[in-house]
Amino acid sequence: MSKNELNNRLDTRGEKVMQQRLSAPAMFVKTLAWLFAICLIAQVFLAGLAVFSDSARWTEHSHFADGFAVLPLIMLIIAMVTKQPAAIRAQCAALVGMIVLMFLSAIYLKQIGWLAAIHPVIAVFLFFRAMALIRTVGKIH
View 1 (cartoon, rainbow, N blue to C red):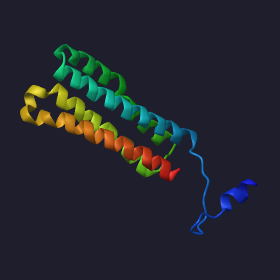
View 2 (view 1 turned 90 degrees about the vertical axis):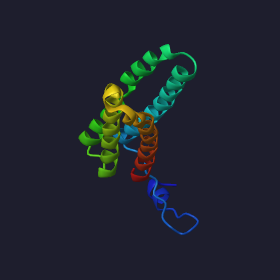
View 3 (view 1 turned 30 degrees about the vertical axis):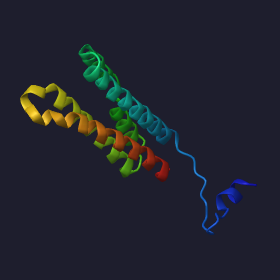
View 4 (view 1 turned 45 degrees about the vertical axis):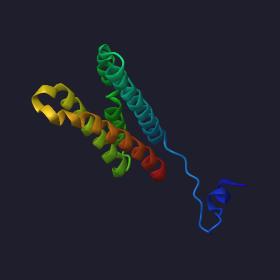
């Protein structure tokens, strides 16, 4: 079957099925988003260890965050430089913004008092935004 025949074949509803591949930059953004989501899960685990097992583990929690927090910025730069669709750029920018809020909530813990409780809530939103980015990249490309 030729490429044109493959691209023009019909699905069970009679609609054209478009066989598309992700561009290299889009695939890279998607891969980084998966890596970021996995890191978030590991980060929550480290926080759980610090809360429920050994409070000395907070150092691991904070150092691990320093290592993977740059991923959304890398995704945003790639999305901007390679002129990815606005939906992808916006979601990458949202991740960067949430990372900034996450760090601010940890740095100014004493100054913001009870508002610091937003820290784990932001983590949940980061995870779901990363998943949404993965879906968006898959739909658009």
